[in-house]
Length: 378
Image (cartoon, rainbow, N blue to C red; front, side, top):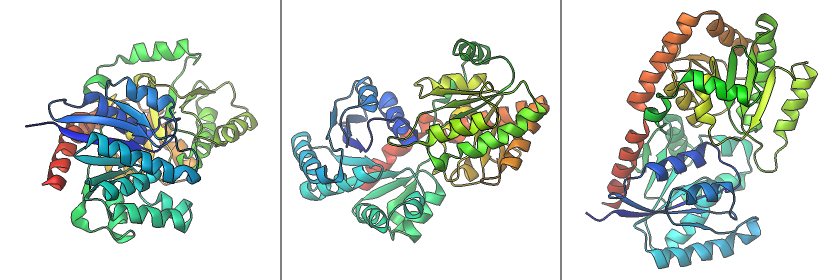
């Protein structure tokens, strides 16, 4: 059986967040007897482009930096598709979905997409953006939603037929993450300037929807009870955003500059997670929460907002703790509960790791996508 030729297109190239890491995971672990990949970005080459190149697959960048350049970018993609003749075009995120839909229609190539979010576009963007998402979605032979909440949104709000939507949870490299030595990860964090004391960690790009300000407010409560605690924030600004500066100002205003560490974007963020005492994800909306599953794979006890895909990822009081969204008091109390009760933290961490291995391993994700492609192409 010949490998399926899959052309992936993702919007951004400057940042590497959840959706970008999903694509990297698929590319790094792809079985070359099953797939032959070509990996592209809508925007000009950037850090993601270099990371994709390191996987060994052919890459391209359309160079679209403004909506006025979309038509030219779409025509470039049409030319690439005609030259490469992929079996399927697979898009990730809004701009790539629209450009990929145009190229698919122009060339007659089957189109699929991964929907990495639930209702974020309809809540936070113009009606035109939602209309564009709907237009692209309805031209797909299949859509992989990363959570049941995302699948419901596609069907109920965007009018996609349910039989075209399949839930494929994201996955983490459990085999690698579960084997990382926590003591080694903690030592690496010391080398990065993070002092001694129990660490509360969060890995997320700085964007208001990620809830960093609620986490800092919660940590102020944690610090009042546990002065030795430190907060470690892994991630950088979304392109053009100023959220990190706002969070830094909040930290300074609370007198916590010595206790909160901004480590920026790090390609080894998941390798540092085993050094945390608690992992917290305070998002206001989350399609899935890949970093949460990475933390669970590392046997870290997790505290997450009760939103989006995290409602299914984390079983409350079994594989982690869920708290009301945008509630710093509840978030702080949950973190303190885990810091104060090492036995509970260990139990939740072990259960979370077992759940991540069973339901969210990268091996399973690769198998699910292979079945997905072959079903929509049948």
